[in-house]
Amino acid sequence: MTYARDVKRKDEKLLDDTQQDETSEKVILGRITGVYGVNGWLKIFSYTDPMEAIVDYSPWYIRAEGQNQAPWTRVKLYAGKRHAKTVVAKLEHCNDRDAAMAYIGNEIAIELEQLESLKDKNEYYWRDLIGLRVINQQNVELGVVKSLLETGANDVLVVVSEIESEQGSKVEVRERLIPWTMHNAIIAVDMEEKVIEVDWDPEF
Image: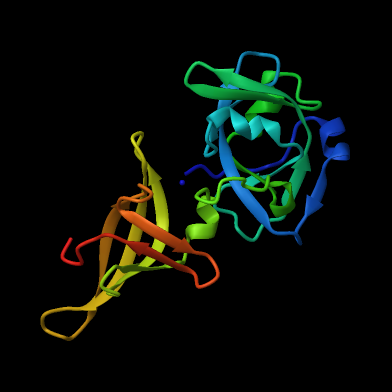
């Protein structure tokens, strides 16, 4: 939610206009997966919903995926749109295919402050659900949210817990997949207590 390539640019003007940022908290929204055409457009794999919402944000912060210790580089979005089943975008001063190729394998982030406030009380950013404890209506601890999956019909919580093996000699990790269906599998979310209450049989 891999590519890892050098973030060095071939466009000197682009190098002059970018800024590196290592301090503020970032939220990853997608990654650059390829080039589109010959005029510097990029193919984007977006984690936003809808997918084209990623182009509503600018600037972007990019770095090679998997390079967690590397600084982020700020780039300005010139244009972007949904194209068939993907998103295409163009960055300022990226005007040809060679310049665009240098971006492949970079993940895309924004600053936390760029996120819009959610208006619906039952809406949450995925990042805010990671790490929350999950209990059922009988107050049985099911684990913590490790990640979320997008399945098409609905999102799914990946909940993990540690259990002792039958021999008692080691700890095993158990994974549960709980659909994100409010007022059905999901009963309540308490962000202050960092707990999600679910209607779920602990045997599943």
